[in-house]
Image (cartoon, rainbow, N blue to C red; front, side, top):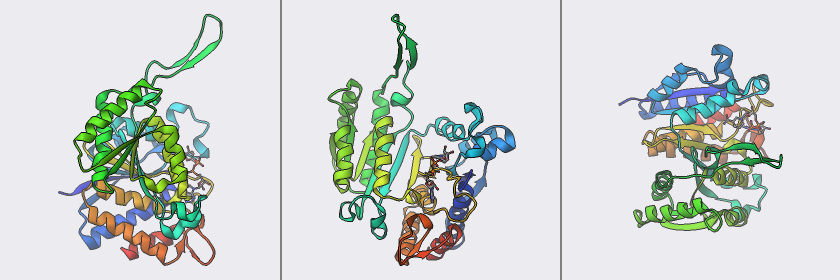
Length: 357
Ligand code: NAD
């Protein structure tokens, strides 16, 4: 059956990088039998300008109906002074919430060709291929009660609540286990079980889920040690699974191990494997409209979509191999350019990957 993909370019470089990802999808359709229908939609500042809302009802309805969503990025100087309720970022958060996207997958892959882009020594990071699975709809970012109250003494006190139910932990750990089964069969669950009761329970539930996956080696690590290990010896990890806040911090840290924000894709999945796919970077208004943005994170997000939502792993591998090929050929956008390499623009990079498919 034809699968439907909602295409949401959004703002800034989102327009340019998504255009390149669409080239890839169209080439796979035309030449390799990919059976998909692409549907256009508005989100972020672009949607606000046209409809007065960063997430129009029509976009939400299309997103619900589609099998997957490809998003560029949202935001920009133009909309910074708007009321927070209609800022572009609300469109993104609204989509995550309304679609129930509880599992955030953030791979950190360092292509050997780009080992010099990292601030870490090449031998520490070259060939890094790590997947962080972050819980996205629970934990301290959403827990109630929360706020700032004034004590009897007159002093103000801020408070938030770290809360996870067993079922929330169970489902995110299962996502990590299923992914590990398709990779190196190792999962490290990150918590702070020595201090926080909530994550002590997290560890118990993770252990229980682990028993259902005898082929996967499950380990546990405190978050402070995990942060240290990520910069000391990141290649020891295959899949890491953790809470919303720990994942927020560790995934940014892992992304920077690769040194190139323009290379990293991400996925956010619901209970049924439907997902939203986007590069980890923002709308980069400083370089928008100049044909210099790196489209590879968005193109690699399409590969993730094919693997995790559309059940087309061979097509995903085809894209990843094509990206490897253009890097081997020495093509580089400005953000990853180094001496001796050929500097290309956004569209040229997209064309080169399309040709290499
Ligand atoms: P950013 O990721 O947009 O840019 C950070 C730096 O990285 C900039 O110098 C930019 O030029 C560069 N960069 C980013 N993507 C690149 C690419 N593909 N190729 C080459 N260089 C690239 O982060 P920011 O500057 O903090 O935020 C800009 C806007 O994006 C803000 O409005 C912010 O709210 C929004 N934002 C959106 C998302 C999202 O849509 N998921 C994520 C982060 C930030």
